[in-house]
Image (cartoon, rainbow, N blue to C red; front, side, top):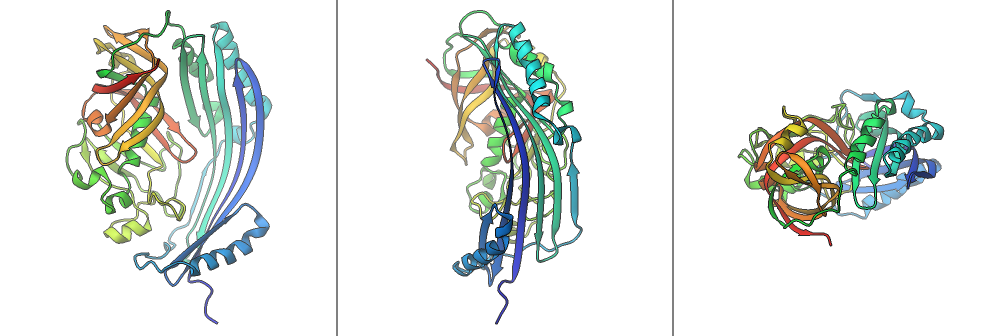
Amino acid sequence: MGKLFDESEIIATLTQHALTRFTQNYIHQNMAGENFEAQIRIIKDGREGTFTTNRVDNVPQAFQMAIKIALAQKPDKSFPGLPRGGRRINFQNVSPATEKCTPARRASIVKKIISLARRNRVEAAGALATKTILLHISNSNGVKSVQYSTTAELNLVMSNAQLSGYSYWVGSDINDMPTEQLADEAIQKCLYKGKPLAVKPGAWTVVFSPYASAMIVKFLAYMGFGAKAFIEKRSFMNKLMGKKVAACGVTIYDDGLEPEGVPRAFDYEGMPKKKVYFIRNGVAAGLVHDSRTAAKMGARNTGHALPAPNAMGPFALNLFMSPGKPSEEQIIAGVERGIYVTKIHYPGIVEPVSTVMTGMTKDGTFLIENGRLSKPVRNLRFTQSLLEAFSNVEAIGSEQRCLASYIDAATAPALRIASFHFTGMTT
């Protein structure tokens, strides 16, 4: 009897998470949970099979199911095999304060936020979450990578009858969260007088907050920073690699070990992450790879695999846009008439090769007049080529903020962009 499989891989994740939600200046939900998940990948004669379970006692059966799935597939002649082991990775990014954060501690932080809201006669809503993750990836070729990390995250919206303001923070150590600063940042957007104005859609000079900038950096990554899209000729990079694609000050890269983001030392094949520049001083510079795309293109594996199988291919999960020198206030001061955007809501891709994105403004949209935020503005919809927007960058702020989701993160500064296209307005 021959071998049941040629190669095997296991991705095991143990997650402990807790959350305190609040709205209308009251805590309305506390929850906590723990989840185990194991994904088994089996390779047999070039055939791949994966099976996932959330039961520890079901892992042996999961191996058997992955074998059956692999045998039912067609061989993939382009598959290079699972990565081979070299040095083993054991990475920790743990805050004891976050790891041991209690419901009472989260409630005390939220209480401080709510007290500031009441003092300013606005209402606070949002969520404060903590998470501890143990990630273990190993394969039959000697790869073994382990990461133990914590994250704390605050999503915050302040509002009154007419206006709302937003702030956000994510980091490893909950003690580092600047609670009062974040609360004040959102409150200030609610203190302007009068109803939001209707402004005419069209091409405007805009100033994006770091949150809005981080969102468009994320979406540009979806449209073309991965080698799979490049191989399939559906990336904007296909015709632009090595060419000028943005203003000279624009540099965007991925760095899994940069602590200002959400660090990840290795990818979902257990390979160490490499720093990769996508746009460097305005010029298209590179792509992220996993073992499969690296083999197809004869390139270096940069350590950006997602769990297999997936449609995305390699992906940048810890993005950065390099900062400039002026403060956000100085960037705004350089605008005679324009729009300030705090947050992008309901974003979507219209056409990836031409990098056209759509979305709406939310939680703090203002008219800029004579270098200052003068009046609140009704929320606007935009439809815009991101490469065109990055080519029209006039100023880049000095302070960066990180915006994270369940899988990726982007850290970016404020931006001033000329001729940004708004196509509609809320009623």
